[in-house]
Length: 143
Image (cartoon, rainbow, N blue to C red; front, side, top):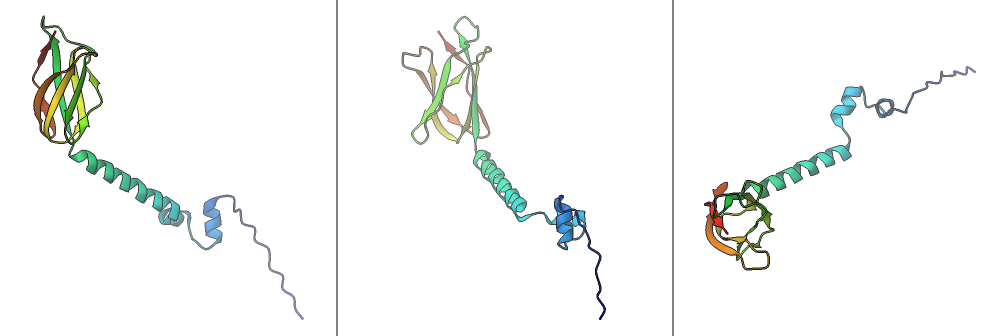
């Protein structure tokens, strides 16, 4: 009777590539080329989110304008909103030091531009037509 003893082969399975190779996956580049199912799912979810966000913002318009005081100086810190029946009122945008304001992510249509010169008082309202991709509102003089 002949007894054959096979030499034990020790494989370092601390690295994921070595484990996959021990399981018959082949080379390291083949392991990375295949990727795990989890990483493929993450890639699909990421691509889906990018497409959804891109599609939602593809039809978005921007309104920009400038407010000046009657003496010609820039009106800084004035709140500006925009509203219509479908969307309601936007969050306020404040004019910068140069009097410029920007309202983003609007759909094309008819809106009311509201300028809140006095925070406790009623706004000064102008009707504007928003078109994509951008609408330049006329310069407005405020007291």
